[in-house]
Image (cartoon, one colour):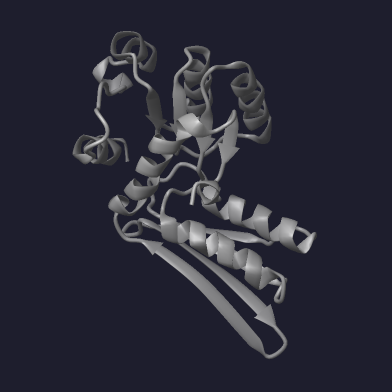
Length: 213
C-alpha cells in the first residue's frame, strides 16, 4: 500500500512526493519529517507502529492521514486530544475505497428496515488484524443506526483475496446482501488523494471517508 500511495502522489499534478519512510531502508519517519518538512504524512504501516507514528506527526505539526488499522479506542481518544492541541489534523479511514464507504452508508439505510444482519470480511492471508477495520466500522455504524448490539463479524484470510466485505441482512422470508470487492490496491488511491487534499481543512481528528464525500 505504501508503494501504491507513493505512485499515486507522484502522478497527481497538485502534489509532490518529498519523502518515503521505511525502517527496512533505515529511513525512519522522524528523520524523513526532519529533512523533508512535509505538509501531510500518509501512514499505511502496521498496527504496532501506527499510533506512535500519528502522535509523532501531530507533535511535529504535520497533518497525518492514517490508513493502517489496529488503533484501539483509547489510542483514538489520545490522538483526538493531541490533535486538539496541535496545529495539525489527523484523518483516519478504515477503508479508502469509495465503494466500501458507500456500502457502509447503504448498510445504515438497510438496517433501519432489516436490523438483523451479520458481516463477512475476506482479506489476503498477510493481513495482520482480524476483524478488519472496515468490518468493525460497519458494525459500529449499524449498531448506532439500530440502537442495538453490533452485528457478528466473520473473518476469512486466504491467499488470492485482496479486500472484500459482505453484509447479509435477514427478514421475514427474505435476505438482502450488500457486497464490495477491492480487486486491486489502486481502488484505494482516489480516497487517499482526497484525504491528502482535505486533511488540512479539518478540525482536529476525523474518522471516516464519508465525511469528505
